[in-house]
Length: 161
Image (cartoon, rainbow, N blue to C red):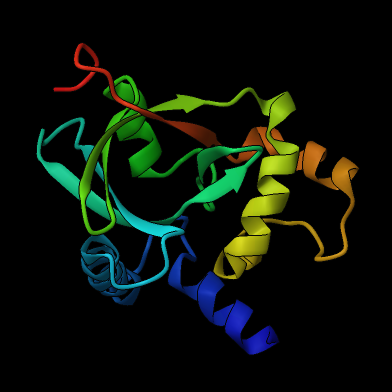
């Protein structure tokens, strides 16, 4: 397990995906968008803040208290989070079907239980989030501000493009 965690860290060593991770993410996004894997995975499409074109990322959807969430496993400084904020939370989710969504950022003080659930359903994210498997809620509260969490809402006609 240690080697696998090191491998996952290596793929995102600089906080950005290396070439292999980018290729893997493209393939993952295509498969997730097609609805091939479980319903907790999808492809997230966000409009590039500079290019204006849609960029797709594979993501794990987390359900907590009847709502769906997305978590940035690499923290604040990733492009999809910056692009999403620049576009006021407008995005597209694809898992067999296309869904226009609005992603609303969750306040840091409310993130801890969602982060706990996220690491339960997305074990590949564990090497990037500095808490032990057996960590209690207090440990998640300490790091919550560093990892953006977004609540997924179906886009209304006036919020969609």
